[in-house]
Image (cartoon, rainbow, N blue to C red; front, side, top):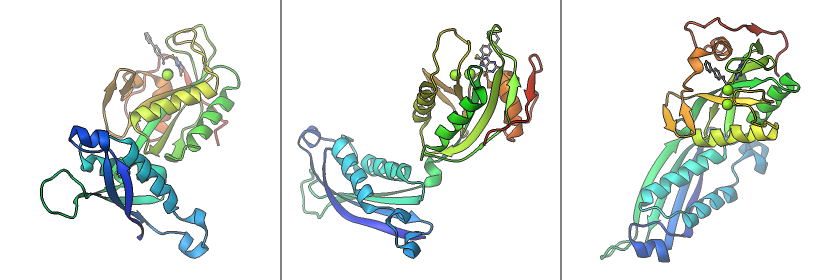
Length: 274
Ligand code: X6L
Ligand code: MG
Ligand code: MG
């Protein structure tokens, strides 16, 4: 393991339990140690083959300046979370936050906390169902996958074959092409939802008829083993186990072993995504 350390970065911020700390602010010192399995730049001597410490300094400065937490524990954890999300080459982060002017009556150098976080703690396996039944269906699915791959917080993406499927829910529309994709991500479930919605916008999805035709549809099926129940997002997807167009590609990815309902047809096709 190789390490890069930003030592005692002096930044102004507004974290503290007392009102005046949140209003007036104070200086903090942040030390941040990044663990990278092997820094390529030590051989190539190229800036792009390492983690630019200037970019990490920006994250520290921005987080400390813009947050108003009660605890420096929370501030340290937010810094480490943002640093890990910023570059997938970083495997672990140690953050030390010092508060030299903490409102404590007595003689001390600084109050401080140290926290550490590893990539595996914030990285989750996500599984999506993709479908299209308007325009060039295969091209739409391909573009959706290219956009997913283009996100630096998405890694190790794999996808199932393409399946031509009969519409479910609203019959009077063209057949779909469906598939499923699995990847690792540091996006939170809500961030992932916003990202899939932005892909639907980019690929000109227009919501007119409920359950009706669409250029592209991306549904979040699974996010690690976590359960989620937010107003606009429920994970696992509540109806995924009723739909052959979801379960067939899921089975192909080794993510589902059970029964598959056979009411509507689902036919694996020869062409495939790249
Ligand atoms: C009763 C009432 C029974 C509604 C089923 C099922 C509604 C599925 C919506 C339902 C009901 C859905 C796709 C699709 C849709 C797709 C195929 C939906 C949402 N999306 N059919 N229908 N592929 N083959 O991606 O899944 S609309
Ligand atoms: Mg859907
Ligand atoms: Mg949807």
